Length: 230
Image 1 (cartoon, rainbow, N blue to C red):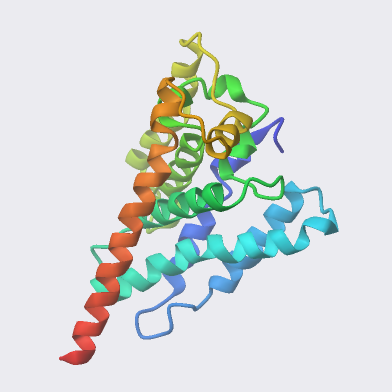
Image 2: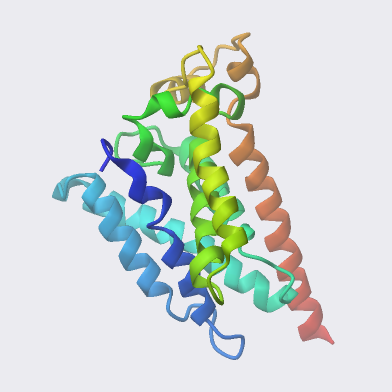
């Protein structure tokens, strides 16, 4: 629904809630087939249900599901201090991998849902194109805290409203153009070193998220091995 993309700011919140169903005494794969199904249907719909994209949709859905599986894995290994913001980090890191390994039209980024509302994203000249992905994920995460975690929280609802409306309002105060998907793809396809601010830093948010995600997973794996050795 690119011409009316408001549901993208609410539709992922239930996926955060599904991770609560995976219990420590069970496999961390429990219930994640529901997330895989939801992502597969969503990405397939984004491709207008064209069957030629079916394989790429399934592959990308499986990989994105790993963001939720990774959260469950690290939480079970490292304890309850691991929060759902890890899902945001893992997702951003995976999108950066998509960007580095493929530039085909079959690859979708969450920020593409706002491709017809680029006037909302003029601030992405500072964050990069995938800053839109981070914005969408954070809104859905806060909506989860507002309605789906334990009980309805007015405080989190206020935070949700501010994080949703704030970037849109700020964008309309800017006169520069937003970074488009084509510019991001061109930057990562080109071997030429440009001098503009975006070309200098690129998609630094998902790149940083990818490094942090890797460190978290390594630490969780080492923690697992140390427990087994004990």
